[in-house]
Length: 271
Image (cartoon, rainbow, N blue to C red):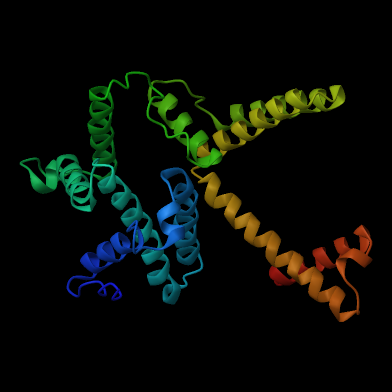
C-alpha cells in the first residue's frame, strides 16, 4: 500500500485544513488526533489563547506568530469535527463571523454615519448584541455571559451587565466598605471552620474586589497577571540571593526569605 499523498499546496489556510483532515482520517490519520473530542480539545484552546496573550504581554513578537498559529489550529480542529458531524465547516464559520461583523458595523458597511465617538460606538454595539441575545431567547440581563470564562473575567462581565440596568454602586468608597464587610464575614467563617462557608465567603470577597477594580477602571485579570509576574520575578531574586549564599529556599527561614524579598523590592524601585 502506497503512503498517502502530502497535503496540497495553495493557500496556507487550505493547506492547514487539508492537514487536519488527514490527521483526523479514520484509516490514514494519527491515532491521537482521531481520538480527540470536543471536550478534550477545549482545554487546549483556552491554553493557546492564554499563550497568545502572554506573548503579547511580554512583547515577544518573534513568538507571537507561532502562538497565533497554535490558536488557529484549534479553530481548524473544531471546524473539522463539525464537518465530520455535518454541523458546520471552516467556510461556514468564517462566513458567519464575517456576516456578524458587517451587521455590527453599520457605520462602516452601511448607511450610518461614522461621525460618532468610540463610546457611542460601544453603546451601539451593546444594543446590537442585546438584540441578538433576545433573538436567541436570552431575555434576562445576565443571559449569555459564558460559563467557561476565567472566574475574574466572568465576574467583571456579570457586574457590567448588572450596572447597565442600575444595579451598581455610584462611589468606589462604597465598594471598599463592601470589601471590609466581606473580609469580616470571611473571618467569621474561618472561626467556624466550615469548608463550604469558607469557599462561599472567599468567593464573595473576590467578587467585591473585582467590583472595586471595575470602578477604578482596572482589568482584574490584567492586574492579577501583573502581580503574578511581579511575585515570580521577586521570588526568583530571593532564590538567586540564597543561591549566592550556597543555600536554597527550603533551607532558609521565613525571616531570611522576607529580608531578601524586601531587598528585591528596593532594587526594583531603584532604592
